[in-house]
Length: 196
Image (cartoon, rainbow, N blue to C red):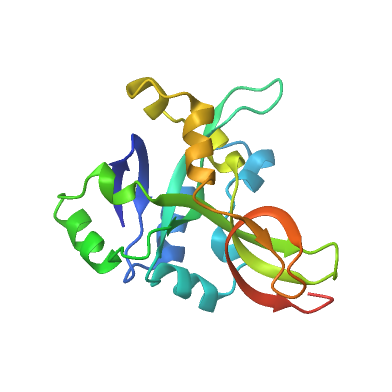
């Protein structure tokens, strides 16, 4: 794991050989936050299968990353928390093994992350055929919780930055009936059986 800064966002980049659960635990345990707010530290390992975590961590177009977010609960002080998300590259010519090495050598640039979007694993439900899938999803909530200094540094509005990233992903269609699901799906995984 290595703390890096890309597109003015600071985060911990997870290498394929890293032990994600160990890295998450180290970060979360070293952070003091109110007990009642622990649910904001959404550990990917908490509800995603180990096999899916390994798939994302070793993907040809995905890497895991741990982001520090600023939480502002109603009527309470701000505090920082960590969340594990997935970086998904929309350009098919990306070579993440080369990028891993560039990050180790500190020779990466913002250009290496221009086509990457921050996503998370969640259920995607089709209201037409009633099927449910595990999916890699991007939404502007991810960017809302991050402090995006790129808007200040590059004189780009926050909305413009979010829209540019979201435009890299299409609104998903159900793999079964091809109807719109209504969320930005980077990739569908397994269909979830009823009762799971």
